[in-house]
Image (tube, rainbow, N blue to C red):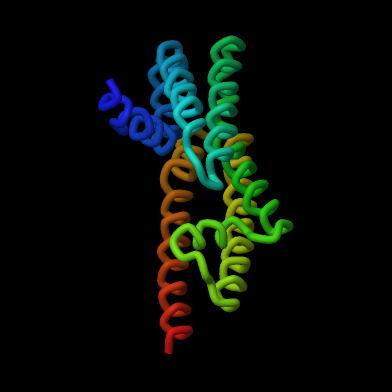
Amino acid sequence: MSGARSLPVVPLLTGLLLLAWPFLIWFGLAHNSLRWLLPLMALLLFLRFHQSRGQAGPLRVVTQVVAAAGITLCIASYLLKTHQLLLFYPVVVNSVMLAVFGGSLWSTMPIIERLARLRERELPETAVRYTRRVTQIWCAFFIINGGIALFTALYGDMPLWTLWNGMISYLLMGTLMAGEWLVRRQVIKRDTQ
């Protein structure tokens, strides 16, 4: 039985659900199939919430809050029969991420530094300053991305909403991650010389 628990099926399914959220919502609205899709999405998000309780690390609370928000939006949309509420999920995700990343700037250790220290306990002072700057850059990203996600939700154009929240924002996030990785490699290389 413990072997079944160790399979990454729930994290994999829920991760795919979150990535595919804009496309699932678009599909559900376009084909009038949210009646059966919403309970399934809420169930997967509940499983993600439950599974994340056993996780350690700085992003556990983020996973739980985002899952709870998704469950709430699914249930409210189902009960109120107003599926436009689902369009605000990307706004909630960006808001939660901004709160976590931005809030960490007021602590002794920003979240990017905490994540970096999971790999390397001792960081030079330049790396500590660098992680603070990266945390600030992510905060700016979440403000801009969340603002555009809010605009697309309020505007209500489903192709535009799906394009931004299902593709462009992911491409920008990936570009930011890749750019940060390249810069970090240069900073590490410079510090070791």
